[in-house]
Length: 356
Image (tube, rainbow, N blue to C red; front, side, top):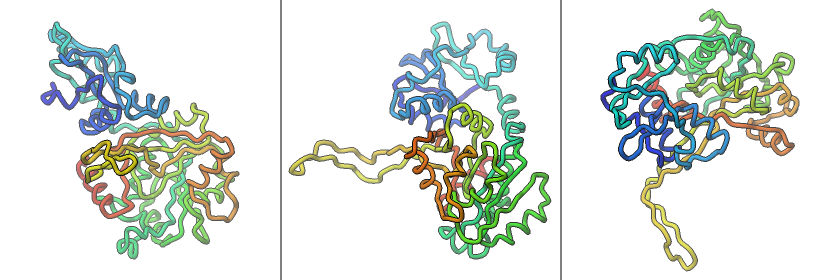
């Protein structure tokens, strides 16, 4: 049973952005929503939040607008049935309530959570994965003077291998690596590794940007495919990302993560003649950022000029300006790890170590 109840509870007036942060912190993927008397009024999962954000784009809305209003629960005298109910109904948790409908405890289906964390699927069995591994990684000098960025270890495993391993969990078997800088080292590493998946190396004669080299794979990429940078880790269900993309009508789906930025100063707002109208101490700004992972339709390749440098933002802007639909798949802040700079590299290592 649950000891620290508060970390799993939310309140109807709590903004979506705060609920996302609290779900990140409790690592269970949900909150149970209670009123001022701790009576159960709803539940909220990361999936509920994602559907709300895709529908509205609003981070500041109260969670009362997005929550599920008829959550499953148990009376205190029925807790002995909890495991059976959670297994049969595929639930990860059940709140325990008293006769006043107040939440007194939460029982988690630990067995189910462990199974979800370790099983594999074949949802991406026929989905190619393109990994941009040709950059010099100048922000990580002097490390990248010795190793190419894709081979920089996070713990004891190179970042590129970790990325591939995550896709393998969902059945992906065909990987296209765009390589340039220190490409022989990358090839040598994976030759010695002898992986069970298939690696195809796409060699750039010159840097073609974060989208330009996709043009070189036009004949191979005939179905929707993933594209990812080689310096990020995304903790998400890749099968659900692909499924959302296919049902959305998007030509490109950008995997996005919440980013909270704390301004370390008091912020002033003022009007004409310098008259202050408002002061806010150390405000937190919240944005959705581009993680560097995408799902793309094959037709996108036709928008890329042959043998010309093209970065992904340029390509997406061009398509949007011509009326093509580019959408988003939002994730929580904790789902995105980036090793592009030293501070973020350390955070990634700490996160990986905490999960091992």
